[in-house]
Amino acid sequence: MKLLFERSRTGRAMNLLPDCDVPEVSFDESLLRSSAPRLPELSEVDLDRHYTALSKETYGVNSGFYPLGSCTMKYNPRVNEAMASLPGFTELHPLQDPATTQGALELLHTAGKYICEITGMDDMTFQPAAGAHGEYTGLLLIRRYHQLRGDLEKRTKILVPDSAHGTNPASAVMAGFTVVSVPSNAEGGVDLDALRAAAGEDTAGLMLTNPNTLGLFDPNILEITKIVHEAGGLCYYDGANLNAVMGHARPGDMGFDCVHVNLHKTFSTPHGGGGPGSGPVGCKAFLSDYLPSPQVREDNGVYSLYDPSESVGKVRSFQGNFLVVVRAMTYLFSLGGEGLTEASSTAVLNANYMMHRLSKSYEIAYPGICMHEFVMDLKKLKDETGISAMDVAKRLLDFGIHPPTMYFPLIVHEALMLEPTETESRETLDDACDLFLEIAKEARENPEILHSAPNTRTVGRPDEVSAARNPILRYPFE
Ligand SMILES: Cc1ncc(COP(=O)(O)O)c(C=O)c1O
Image 1 (cartoon, helix red, strand yellow):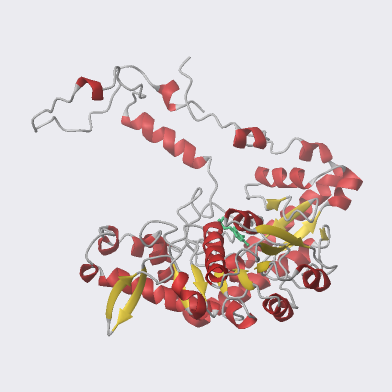
Image 2 (cartoon, helix red, strand yellow; image 1 turned 90 degrees about the vertical axis):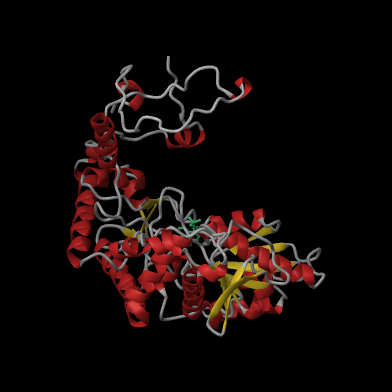
Protein backbone atom coordinates (compact mmCIF):
# COMPACT_ATOMS: atom_id res chain seq x y z
CA MET A 1 0.00 0.00 0.00
CA LYS A 2 1.34 3.47 -0.90
CA LEU A 3 2.00 5.89 1.93
CA LEU A 4 0.41 9.35 1.98
CA PHE A 5 3.76 10.93 1.11
CA GLU A 6 4.08 8.64 -1.89
CA ARG A 7 0.62 9.63 -3.10
CA SER A 8 1.34 13.33 -2.60
CA ARG A 9 1.51 15.66 -5.67
CA THR A 10 2.64 19.27 -5.35
CA GLY A 11 -0.30 21.66 -5.40
CA ARG A 12 -2.99 19.01 -5.06
CA ALA A 13 -4.40 20.51 -1.90
CA MET A 14 -7.89 20.50 -0.52
CA ASN A 15 -9.50 23.87 0.01
CA LEU A 16 -11.47 23.01 3.08
CA LEU A 17 -10.73 26.14 5.08
CA PRO A 18 -12.51 29.44 4.34
CA ASP A 19 -10.49 32.57 3.51
CA CYS A 20 -9.00 34.27 6.53
CA ASP A 21 -11.40 36.97 7.78
CA VAL A 22 -9.48 38.16 10.83
CA PRO A 23 -6.41 40.44 10.91
CA GLU A 24 -3.13 38.61 10.34
CA VAL A 25 -0.67 38.67 13.24
CA SER A 26 3.08 38.96 12.70
CA PHE A 27 5.23 36.91 15.02
CA ASP A 28 8.80 37.58 15.97
CA GLU A 29 11.12 36.07 13.31
CA SER A 30 12.84 33.95 15.96
CA LEU A 31 9.56 32.15 16.62
CA LEU A 32 8.99 31.21 12.99
CA ARG A 33 10.22 28.05 11.33
CA SER A 34 12.65 28.59 8.45
CA SER A 35 10.78 26.46 5.94
CA ALA A 36 7.24 25.20 5.56
CA PRO A 37 6.53 21.71 6.99
CA ARG A 38 6.70 18.93 4.41
CA LEU A 39 3.11 17.79 4.50
CA PRO A 40 1.58 15.46 1.93
CA GLU A 41 -0.66 17.19 -0.61
CA LEU A 42 -3.68 15.19 -1.60
CA SER A 43 -7.24 15.52 -2.76
CA GLU A 44 -10.00 14.62 -0.33
CA VAL A 45 -10.94 11.47 -2.22
CA ASP A 46 -7.34 10.18 -2.17
CA LEU A 47 -7.12 10.81 1.55
CA ASP A 48 -10.47 9.12 2.15
CA ARG A 49 -9.46 6.06 0.11
CA HIS A 50 -6.16 5.80 1.93
CA TYR A 51 -7.76 5.61 5.37
CA THR A 52 -10.59 3.38 4.16
CA ALA A 53 -8.01 0.94 2.76
CA LEU A 54 -6.11 1.05 6.03
CA SER A 55 -9.27 0.35 8.02
CA LYS A 56 -9.95 -2.70 5.84
CA GLU A 57 -6.52 -4.07 6.77
CA THR A 58 -7.45 -3.76 10.44
CA TYR A 59 -9.20 -6.50 12.33
CA GLY A 60 -11.43 -5.64 15.25
CA VAL A 61 -14.05 -7.30 17.37
CA ASN A 62 -16.60 -5.80 14.96
CA SER A 63 -14.98 -7.72 12.10
CA GLY A 64 -15.25 -11.20 13.55
CA PHE A 65 -14.26 -13.72 16.19
CA TYR A 66 -11.41 -12.49 18.39
CA PRO A 67 -10.52 -15.16 20.96
CA LEU A 68 -7.46 -13.34 22.29
CA GLY A 69 -6.85 -14.97 25.67
CA SER A 70 -6.28 -12.65 28.61
CA CYS A 71 -7.86 -9.74 26.71
CA THR A 72 -11.63 -10.34 26.97
CA MET A 73 -12.39 -9.02 23.51
CA LYS A 74 -16.14 -8.96 24.02
CA TYR A 75 -18.47 -6.97 21.81
CA ASN A 76 -18.71 -3.28 22.71
CA PRO A 77 -22.42 -2.40 22.50
CA ARG A 78 -23.33 0.60 20.32
CA VAL A 79 -25.49 2.06 23.06
CA ASN A 80 -22.31 2.67 25.10
CA GLU A 81 -21.05 4.91 22.30
CA ALA A 82 -24.37 6.72 22.02
CA MET A 83 -24.28 7.58 25.74
CA ALA A 84 -20.61 8.61 25.67
CA SER A 85 -21.39 10.98 22.77
CA LEU A 86 -24.04 12.97 24.63
CA PRO A 87 -23.02 16.64 24.66
CA GLY A 88 -23.74 16.82 28.39
CA PHE A 89 -20.73 14.55 28.84
CA THR A 90 -18.48 15.51 25.94
CA GLU A 91 -18.71 19.27 26.47
CA LEU A 92 -17.73 19.26 30.12
CA HIS A 93 -14.46 20.73 31.28
CA PRO A 94 -12.77 19.06 34.25
CA LEU A 95 -12.02 22.44 35.83
CA GLN A 96 -15.68 23.50 35.86
CA ASP A 97 -17.20 24.37 39.21
CA PRO A 98 -18.57 21.09 40.67
CA ALA A 99 -21.92 22.87 41.09
CA THR A 100 -22.19 22.71 37.29
CA THR A 101 -21.00 19.10 36.90
CA GLN A 102 -23.26 17.34 39.37
CA GLY A 103 -24.45 14.77 36.82
CA ALA A 104 -20.92 13.70 35.91
CA LEU A 105 -19.90 13.47 39.57
CA GLU A 106 -23.01 11.45 40.34
CA LEU A 107 -22.12 9.09 37.50
CA LEU A 108 -18.60 8.56 38.87
CA HIS A 109 -19.90 8.11 42.39
CA THR A 110 -22.57 5.62 41.30
CA ALA A 111 -20.14 3.67 39.08
CA GLY A 112 -17.79 3.46 42.08
CA LYS A 113 -20.59 2.17 44.30
CA TYR A 114 -21.64 -0.47 41.76
CA ILE A 115 -18.13 -1.77 41.08
CA CYS A 116 -17.41 -1.79 44.83
CA GLU A 117 -20.53 -3.91 45.25
CA ILE A 118 -19.36 -6.27 42.48
CA THR A 119 -15.83 -6.60 43.91
CA GLY A 120 -16.63 -6.43 47.63
CA MET A 121 -14.63 -3.24 48.19
CA ASP A 122 -15.52 -0.02 50.06
CA ASP A 123 -14.00 2.74 47.93
CA MET A 124 -12.78 3.26 44.40
CA THR A 125 -10.70 5.56 42.19
CA PHE A 126 -11.17 5.89 38.43
CA GLN A 127 -7.90 7.68 37.80
CA PRO A 128 -5.78 4.77 36.49
CA ALA A 129 -5.87 4.65 32.70
CA ALA A 130 -5.26 0.92 32.28
CA GLY A 131 -5.02 -2.33 34.17
CA ALA A 132 -1.28 -2.14 34.75
CA HIS A 133 -1.69 1.47 35.87
CA GLY A 134 -4.29 0.23 38.36
CA GLU A 135 -1.85 -2.37 39.67
CA TYR A 136 0.74 0.33 40.20
CA THR A 137 -1.84 2.52 41.98
CA GLY A 138 -2.96 -0.35 44.23
CA LEU A 139 0.65 -1.05 45.15
CA LEU A 140 1.11 2.62 46.05
CA LEU A 141 -1.76 2.18 48.53
CA ILE A 142 -0.02 -0.86 50.02
CA ARG A 143 3.23 1.08 50.15
CA ARG A 144 1.57 3.99 51.92
CA TYR A 145 -0.03 1.63 54.45
CA HIS A 146 3.36 0.16 55.45
CA GLN A 147 5.03 3.57 55.32
CA LEU A 148 2.57 5.12 57.77
CA ARG A 149 3.07 2.18 60.14
CA GLY A 150 6.84 2.72 59.98
CA ASP A 151 7.20 -0.68 58.36
CA LEU A 152 8.30 0.18 54.85
CA GLU A 153 12.04 -0.26 55.41
CA LYS A 154 11.39 -3.83 56.45
CA ARG A 155 8.53 -4.79 54.11
CA THR A 156 10.05 -4.55 50.67
CA LYS A 157 8.87 -7.71 48.91
CA ILE A 158 5.83 -8.52 46.85
CA LEU A 159 4.98 -12.17 46.31
CA VAL A 160 3.86 -12.90 42.74
CA PRO A 161 2.81 -16.41 41.64
CA ASP A 162 4.40 -17.52 38.36
CA SER A 163 0.92 -17.83 36.80
CA ALA A 164 0.30 -14.09 37.30
CA HIS A 165 -0.20 -11.70 34.44
CA GLY A 166 3.14 -10.32 33.25
CA THR A 167 2.24 -6.79 34.28
CA ASN A 168 2.08 -7.82 37.99
CA PRO A 169 5.83 -8.18 38.61
CA ALA A 170 6.52 -5.17 36.40
CA SER A 171 4.11 -2.99 38.42
CA ALA A 172 5.63 -4.19 41.70
CA VAL A 173 9.08 -3.13 40.56
CA MET A 174 7.73 0.22 39.31
CA ALA A 175 6.23 0.80 42.78
CA GLY A 176 9.65 0.24 44.36
CA PHE A 177 9.28 -3.34 45.60
CA THR A 178 11.34 -6.47 45.00
CA VAL A 179 9.48 -9.37 43.41
CA VAL A 180 9.53 -12.89 44.85
CA SER A 181 8.17 -15.43 42.39
CA VAL A 182 6.02 -18.21 43.88
CA PRO A 183 5.80 -21.42 41.82
CA SER A 184 2.58 -23.13 40.76
CA ASN A 185 1.59 -26.60 41.91
CA ALA A 186 0.79 -29.48 39.56
CA GLU A 187 -2.84 -28.32 39.25
CA GLY A 188 -1.85 -24.83 38.13
CA GLY A 189 -2.69 -23.11 41.45
CA VAL A 190 -0.35 -21.45 43.92
CA ASP A 191 2.00 -23.90 45.67
CA LEU A 192 0.98 -23.31 49.29
CA ASP A 193 4.18 -24.70 50.82
CA ALA A 194 6.24 -22.40 48.62
CA LEU A 195 3.98 -19.49 49.59
CA ARG A 196 4.39 -20.25 53.30
CA ALA A 197 8.15 -20.42 52.86
CA ALA A 198 8.24 -17.11 50.97
CA ALA A 199 5.92 -15.11 53.27
CA GLY A 200 7.58 -13.42 56.21
CA GLU A 201 8.50 -10.19 57.94
CA ASP A 202 9.81 -8.69 54.70
CA THR A 203 6.52 -9.30 52.86
CA ALA A 204 4.70 -6.13 51.85
CA GLY A 205 2.00 -8.03 50.00
CA LEU A 206 0.88 -10.54 47.43
CA MET A 207 -0.51 -9.92 43.94
CA LEU A 208 -2.80 -12.64 42.75
CA THR A 209 -4.25 -12.86 39.26
CA ASN A 210 -7.47 -14.82 39.69
CA PRO A 211 -8.63 -16.63 37.64
CA ASN A 212 -4.96 -16.94 36.74
CA THR A 213 -3.41 -16.87 33.28
CA LEU A 214 -4.17 -20.58 32.90
CA GLY A 215 -7.87 -19.76 33.22
CA LEU A 216 -8.05 -21.45 36.63
CA PHE A 217 -9.73 -20.26 39.81
CA ASP A 218 -7.40 -21.03 42.71
CA PRO A 219 -9.32 -23.37 45.06
CA ASN A 220 -7.00 -22.40 47.95
CA ILE A 221 -7.73 -18.71 47.68
CA LEU A 222 -8.90 -18.28 51.31
CA GLU A 223 -5.78 -20.06 52.58
CA ILE A 224 -3.60 -17.88 50.33
CA THR A 225 -4.91 -14.59 51.74
CA LYS A 226 -4.70 -16.00 55.28
CA ILE A 227 -1.03 -16.91 54.89
CA VAL A 228 -0.16 -13.44 53.59
CA HIS A 229 -2.18 -11.60 56.25
CA GLU A 230 -0.65 -13.68 59.02
CA ALA A 231 2.76 -12.65 57.73
CA GLY A 232 1.67 -8.98 57.97
CA GLY A 233 1.33 -8.39 54.21
CA LEU A 234 -1.65 -7.07 52.25
CA CYS A 235 -3.42 -8.88 49.43
CA TYR A 236 -3.85 -7.37 45.98
CA TYR A 237 -6.31 -8.98 43.54
CA ASP A 238 -5.63 -8.54 39.83
CA GLY A 239 -9.27 -8.40 38.82
CA ALA A 240 -8.68 -7.97 35.10
CA ASN A 241 -10.21 -11.43 34.67
CA LEU A 242 -13.36 -10.47 36.56
CA ASN A 243 -15.44 -11.45 33.54
CA ALA A 244 -15.17 -15.02 34.81
CA VAL A 245 -16.54 -14.38 38.30
CA MET A 246 -18.63 -11.21 38.47
CA GLY A 247 -21.90 -11.81 40.21
CA HIS A 248 -20.61 -15.13 41.56
CA ALA A 249 -17.65 -14.35 43.82
CA ARG A 250 -16.10 -11.15 45.21
CA PRO A 251 -12.40 -10.52 45.89
CA GLY A 252 -13.39 -8.58 49.02
CA ASP A 253 -15.02 -11.73 50.45
CA MET A 254 -11.90 -13.77 49.71
CA GLY A 255 -9.72 -11.61 51.93
CA PHE A 256 -8.30 -9.15 49.40
CA ASP A 257 -7.54 -5.60 50.48
CA CYS A 258 -7.47 -3.96 47.06
CA VAL A 259 -8.27 -4.83 43.51
CA HIS A 260 -8.22 -3.36 40.04
CA VAL A 261 -10.63 -4.19 37.25
CA ASN A 262 -10.25 -3.48 33.55
CA LEU A 263 -13.28 -1.58 32.26
CA HIS A 264 -11.91 -2.27 28.77
CA LYS A 265 -12.23 -5.99 29.39
CA THR A 266 -15.05 -6.86 31.78
CA PHE A 267 -17.27 -3.83 31.26
CA SER A 268 -17.36 -3.79 27.45
CA THR A 269 -15.48 -0.58 26.76
CA PRO A 270 -13.10 -0.44 23.80
CA HIS A 271 -9.49 -1.53 24.22
CA GLY A 272 -8.08 1.02 21.81
CA GLY A 273 -4.49 0.95 20.62
CA GLY A 274 -2.78 1.40 23.97
CA GLY A 275 -5.73 3.30 25.34
CA PRO A 276 -7.79 5.08 26.38
CA GLY A 277 -8.60 2.35 28.86
CA SER A 278 -9.57 2.44 32.48
CA GLY A 279 -8.29 0.36 35.36
CA PRO A 280 -10.20 1.56 38.44
CA VAL A 281 -8.85 0.47 41.81
CA GLY A 282 -11.07 -0.51 44.71
CA CYS A 283 -9.91 -0.85 48.28
CA LYS A 284 -11.14 -1.72 51.75
CA ALA A 285 -12.02 1.20 54.02
CA PHE A 286 -8.72 1.08 55.91
CA LEU A 287 -6.91 2.09 52.68
CA SER A 288 -9.42 4.79 51.60
CA ASP A 289 -7.43 7.72 52.98
CA TYR A 290 -4.54 6.86 50.66
CA LEU A 291 -6.54 6.89 47.40
CA PRO A 292 -5.43 9.28 44.65
CA SER A 293 -6.92 12.75 44.85
CA PRO A 294 -9.44 14.07 44.21
CA GLN A 295 -12.20 11.66 45.17
CA VAL A 296 -15.93 12.24 44.68
CA ARG A 297 -18.21 12.28 47.69
CA GLU A 298 -21.93 12.74 48.19
CA ASP A 299 -23.57 14.64 50.99
CA ASN A 300 -27.37 15.02 51.05
CA GLY A 301 -27.60 14.60 47.29
CA VAL A 302 -24.80 17.10 46.56
CA TYR A 303 -21.61 15.81 44.97
CA SER A 304 -18.20 17.36 45.59
CA LEU A 305 -14.50 16.63 45.23
CA TYR A 306 -12.11 16.18 48.14
CA ASP A 307 -8.50 15.17 48.74
CA PRO A 308 -8.11 12.02 50.88
CA SER A 309 -6.06 12.90 53.99
CA GLU A 310 -3.03 10.67 53.27
CA SER A 311 -3.44 10.49 49.49
CA VAL A 312 -0.67 8.96 47.39
CA GLY A 313 -1.21 11.98 45.12
CA LYS A 314 -2.38 11.92 41.54
CA VAL A 315 -1.68 9.04 39.19
CA ARG A 316 -3.39 10.79 36.28
CA SER A 317 -5.07 14.08 35.60
CA PHE A 318 -8.57 14.76 36.93
CA GLN A 319 -10.85 11.67 37.02
CA GLY A 320 -9.05 9.52 34.47
CA ASN A 321 -10.76 8.56 31.22
CA PHE A 322 -14.22 9.79 32.18
CA LEU A 323 -15.99 8.83 28.95
CA VAL A 324 -14.80 5.25 29.38
CA VAL A 325 -16.59 5.22 32.74
CA VAL A 326 -19.74 6.51 30.97
CA ARG A 327 -19.56 3.53 28.60
CA ALA A 328 -19.02 1.07 31.47
CA MET A 329 -21.89 2.59 33.41
CA THR A 330 -24.14 2.18 30.38
CA TYR A 331 -23.17 -1.49 30.31
CA LEU A 332 -23.88 -1.86 34.02
CA PHE A 333 -27.30 -0.24 33.64
CA SER A 334 -28.10 -2.29 30.52
CA LEU A 335 -27.32 -5.66 32.09
CA GLY A 336 -28.18 -5.12 35.75
CA GLY A 337 -27.05 -7.55 38.43
CA GLU A 338 -28.67 -10.60 36.89
CA GLY A 339 -27.35 -9.80 33.43
CA LEU A 340 -23.78 -9.41 34.70
CA THR A 341 -23.98 -12.73 36.52
CA GLU A 342 -25.31 -14.38 33.38
CA ALA A 343 -22.55 -12.79 31.29
CA SER A 344 -19.92 -14.46 33.50
CA SER A 345 -21.69 -17.79 33.42
CA THR A 346 -21.90 -17.69 29.63
CA ALA A 347 -18.25 -16.65 29.29
CA VAL A 348 -17.26 -19.70 31.34
CA LEU A 349 -19.66 -21.98 29.47
CA ASN A 350 -18.36 -20.83 26.08
CA ALA A 351 -14.73 -21.40 27.11
CA ASN A 352 -15.51 -24.89 28.40
CA TYR A 353 -17.48 -25.72 25.26
CA MET A 354 -14.57 -24.75 23.00
CA MET A 355 -12.04 -26.47 25.24
CA HIS A 356 -14.02 -29.68 25.13
CA ARG A 357 -14.35 -29.65 21.34
CA LEU A 358 -10.70 -28.76 20.73
CA SER A 359 -9.41 -31.35 23.20
CA LYS A 360 -10.12 -33.95 20.48
CA SER A 361 -7.09 -32.71 18.52
CA TYR A 362 -5.13 -30.45 20.86
CA GLU A 363 -3.64 -31.04 24.29
CA ILE A 364 -5.10 -28.89 27.02
CA ALA A 365 -2.35 -27.61 29.32
CA TYR A 366 -4.38 -28.09 32.52
CA PRO A 367 -7.41 -30.29 31.73
CA GLY A 368 -10.55 -30.09 33.85
CA ILE A 369 -13.09 -27.32 34.15
CA CYS A 370 -11.72 -23.94 33.12
CA MET A 371 -13.07 -20.50 33.83
CA HIS A 372 -13.38 -17.88 31.04
CA GLU A 373 -10.30 -18.99 29.10
CA PHE A 374 -8.08 -22.02 28.58
CA VAL A 375 -4.58 -22.82 27.39
CA MET A 376 -3.67 -25.40 24.78
CA ASP A 377 -0.17 -26.86 24.76
CA LEU A 378 1.04 -27.61 21.23
CA LYS A 379 4.36 -29.16 22.25
CA LYS A 380 3.28 -32.69 21.29
CA LEU A 381 1.91 -31.50 17.94
CA LYS A 382 5.20 -29.69 17.30
CA ASP A 383 7.28 -32.74 18.21
CA GLU A 384 5.20 -34.93 15.93
CA THR A 385 4.67 -32.63 12.94
CA GLY A 386 7.04 -29.67 13.27
CA ILE A 387 4.01 -27.36 13.40
CA SER A 388 4.26 -24.76 16.16
CA ALA A 389 1.73 -22.61 17.99
CA MET A 390 2.90 -19.74 15.78
CA ASP A 391 2.12 -21.73 12.59
CA VAL A 392 -1.41 -22.52 13.78
CA ALA A 393 -1.99 -18.90 14.78
CA LYS A 394 -0.77 -17.64 11.40
CA ARG A 395 -2.94 -20.13 9.52
CA LEU A 396 -6.05 -18.82 11.27
CA LEU A 397 -5.43 -15.48 9.57
CA ASP A 398 -6.00 -17.13 6.19
CA PHE A 399 -9.52 -17.96 7.34
CA GLY A 400 -10.23 -14.47 8.62
CA ILE A 401 -10.29 -15.01 12.37
CA HIS A 402 -8.02 -13.42 14.90
CA PRO A 403 -5.50 -15.82 16.45
CA PRO A 404 -5.55 -16.58 20.15
CA THR A 405 -2.80 -15.29 22.42
CA MET A 406 0.47 -17.08 21.63
CA TYR A 407 3.30 -18.19 23.91
CA PHE A 408 1.56 -16.91 27.02
CA PRO A 409 1.49 -17.78 29.85
CA LEU A 410 5.22 -18.41 29.90
CA ILE A 411 4.89 -21.54 32.02
CA VAL A 412 3.38 -23.35 29.00
CA HIS A 413 6.01 -23.38 26.28
CA GLU A 414 3.97 -23.93 23.10
CA ALA A 415 0.89 -22.11 24.37
CA LEU A 416 -2.24 -20.94 22.59
CA MET A 417 -4.61 -19.24 24.98
CA LEU A 418 -8.27 -18.87 23.98
CA GLU A 419 -10.92 -16.65 25.50
CA PRO A 420 -14.12 -16.72 23.46
CA THR A 421 -16.18 -14.40 25.76
CA GLU A 422 -19.92 -14.54 26.32
CA THR A 423 -20.90 -12.40 23.35
CA GLU A 424 -20.19 -15.12 20.76
CA SER A 425 -22.94 -17.37 19.47
CA ARG A 426 -22.87 -21.16 19.38
CA GLU A 427 -22.49 -20.99 15.57
CA THR A 428 -19.43 -18.72 15.80
CA LEU A 429 -17.84 -21.03 18.35
CA ASP A 430 -18.59 -24.08 16.21
CA ASP A 431 -17.18 -22.46 13.06
CA ALA A 432 -13.99 -21.55 14.94
CA CYS A 433 -13.67 -25.04 16.44
CA ASP A 434 -14.13 -26.62 12.98
CA LEU A 435 -11.32 -24.41 11.71
CA PHE A 436 -8.95 -25.31 14.54
CA LEU A 437 -9.67 -29.01 14.00
CA GLU A 438 -9.13 -28.64 10.26
CA ILE A 439 -5.80 -26.93 10.91
CA ALA A 440 -4.73 -29.77 13.23
CA LYS A 441 -5.51 -32.15 10.34
CA GLU A 442 -3.50 -30.00 7.93
CA ALA A 443 -0.57 -30.15 10.36
CA ARG A 444 -0.37 -33.89 9.76
CA GLU A 445 -1.37 -34.01 6.08
CA ASN A 446 -0.10 -30.79 4.53
CA PRO A 447 2.30 -29.05 6.95
CA GLU A 448 3.83 -26.87 4.20
CA ILE A 449 0.71 -24.73 3.96
CA LEU A 450 1.05 -23.99 7.68
CA HIS A 451 4.74 -23.12 7.50
CA SER A 452 4.06 -20.47 4.85
CA ALA A 453 0.86 -19.08 6.45
CA PRO A 454 -0.64 -16.59 6.27
CA ASN A 455 -0.91 -17.00 2.53
CA THR A 456 -3.60 -14.38 1.93
CA ARG A 457 -2.53 -11.33 3.94
CA THR A 458 -0.63 -8.20 2.91
CA VAL A 459 1.87 -8.77 5.72
CA GLY A 460 2.93 -12.33 6.51
CA ARG A 461 5.40 -12.89 9.30
CA PRO A 462 7.03 -9.61 10.25
CA ASP A 463 10.06 -9.58 12.51
CA GLU A 464 8.02 -8.55 15.53
CA VAL A 465 10.96 -7.85 17.81
CA SER A 466 12.56 -5.45 15.32
CA ALA A 467 9.18 -3.89 14.58
CA ALA A 468 8.67 -3.22 18.30
CA ARG A 469 12.22 -2.13 19.08
CA ASN A 470 13.07 -0.17 15.93
CA PRO A 471 9.79 1.16 14.61
CA ILE A 472 10.08 3.37 11.52
CA LEU A 473 7.82 6.25 12.41
CA ARG A 474 9.16 8.95 10.07
CA TYR A 475 9.01 9.15 6.30
CA PRO A 476 12.63 9.35 5.07
CA PHE A 477 11.88 11.69 2.07
CA GLU A 478 14.87 10.31 0.11
C1 LIG B 1 -4.93 -10.51 34.14
C2 LIG B 1 -4.48 -9.18 33.59
N1 LIG B 1 -3.89 -8.30 34.42
C3 LIG B 1 -3.48 -7.10 33.99
C4 LIG B 1 -3.64 -6.71 32.67
C5 LIG B 1 -3.12 -5.38 32.25
O1 LIG B 1 -4.12 -4.54 31.77
P1 LIG B 1 -3.77 -3.36 30.75
O2 LIG B 1 -3.36 -4.01 29.46
O3 LIG B 1 -5.01 -2.57 30.64
O4 LIG B 1 -2.64 -2.58 31.34
C6 LIG B 1 -4.27 -7.58 31.77
C7 LIG B 1 -4.47 -7.20 30.38
O5 LIG B 1 -5.15 -7.81 29.62
C8 LIG B 1 -4.69 -8.85 32.25
O6 LIG B 1 -5.26 -9.74 31.44
